[in-house]
Amino acid sequence: MELNFNKYTDGLVPAIVQDANTNKVLMLGFVNEEALKITQETGKATFYSRSQKKIWTKGETSGNLLNVVEILSDCDNDTILIKANPIGPTCHKGTDTCFNETNQSDFSLEYLESVINQRLSESPEKSYTRRLFDKGINKLAQKVGEEAVELVIEAKDENDDLFINEAADLMFHYLLLLKAKGFKLDDVISTLARRHKK
Image (tube, rainbow, N blue to C red; front, top):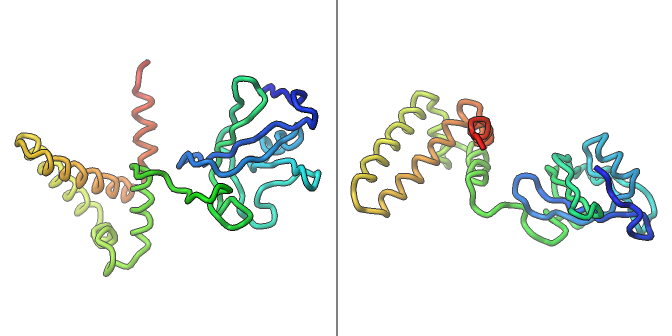
């Protein structure tokens, strides 16, 4: 990565940090050549503090690290985008982002996957997801089969509302079965990507 650190008089380039999963912008910092090198070598987002005039790694005192997934430069090579997985809140004020947003994607399959993980930590008395999960693979596989059959039946009819609801039921139970088998949606997407021919 060839960045133009000489474009600005202070030798710094802006570093936008984005959550690698939710795509939410977490913060804006600045890096010099040394901070970028440390970030690349350690995998921990590291910046240059303009106020304290020193290098600092995000989370070095709080523990709220930014684990780097990818670093991209813009078209002019004078700004970088750091895609990271945050550990805890990013802002020093305790919020998820420095823009006071909740670091959560709009409802998506990835978000649904996180909801499933949360539900599995709840007691069976409170959570249908946990109760079904605790019944094991055979019951989960049977449930996915039942939902698939119900979706096929509704596809042959003209009731769009029933069809889309059965599609949602199948998707939920399919993700739960993936979890029970030790896989995530990303694993399925990676398999599809390998099969994809451009």
